[in-house]
Image (cartoon, rainbow, N blue to C red; front, side, top):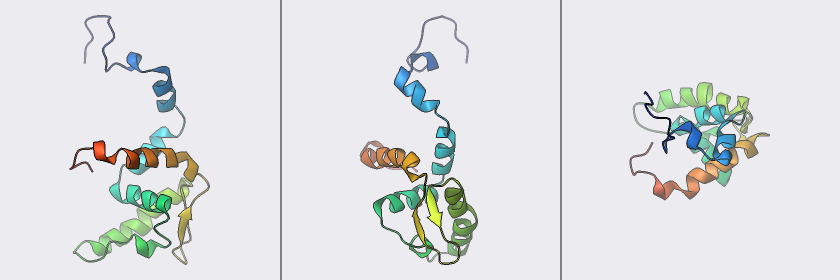
Length: 125
């Protein structure tokens, strides 16, 4: 993308408010968005935030041809990534899931998603 003029467009990084810019440059913001990229991880975090899950069995999608694959992804991908980030505590032996020591870092972003869900397109992932 080329910029012929020196004026600042509304979408240019220079037009960001100081508050927005400081939020986007905080350490760990990229990791949060990376972890929220997958729908299953978003769902797990939202359910943990609402106190709606206690074990991995509460978030395993049952039925359908892909249920075994979903369970493998849950136990070998989604839960380990969330636990490594400290957003959840996950006991691999008992399957218990709870808020992790770093959950407060991602909680505002989860609440932002929940509070503004009605503003997102109906087919938004």
